[in-house]
Length: 242
Image (tube, rainbow, N blue to C red; front, side, top):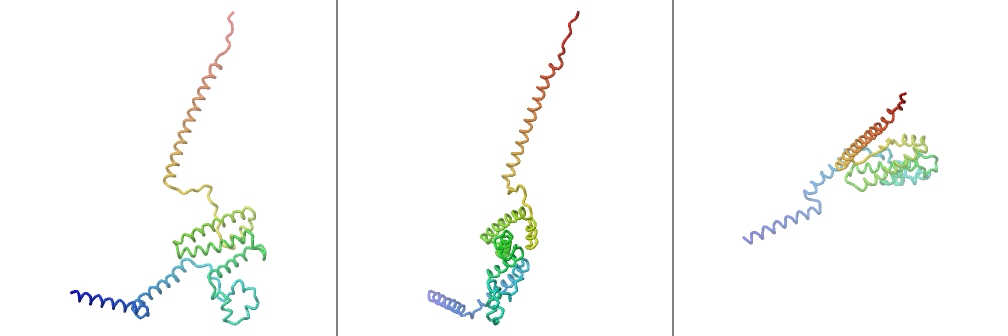
């Protein structure tokens, strides 16, 4: 029995070793099983997510030159291989985002050399916010990028508020060109919790009771004043009888 067990264990060990050795060479069934799963996941991410939330970089054609080479006249006359290296076809995401920021800045800037106005800062924040939204749509559990997006939204709200107070015509132009819907914040907003609702109801009840007590004290004071004035007004001087 012991010899049979040893023989079985050695046979199983040789089979598992052959499977792992074949997996390293890519000749087993394991690779054939994994490939359809990866291709299905890639197709799902490339079709369903992009259809639900379109990217802001879709209007950038791959033949467009990068930002640092767009103003160079020699870049237009180079051969196809070099032009492919200088274009957006082989550019990374940060370079495409930088070009999108420049496009949004060109819509709202005051002049050609304007790089520090409120309109330019709003355009840069808008491009970054939309980039964060696209990323969070694909990765909703990324808390760090969500925090950065909320901080950028708050900064843009403050700048739009200042621009609306100082230059209303520029504010309308920025909202129209960048597609921003400005909503007025509520006068008072607070997170509603059970404790806050109970405390608010208790405070309202106490306030109503205090108002009732004050009203009763006013009525008593008015009644006392009225009683004090009645004898003085009713007494009249009596004449002497001859």
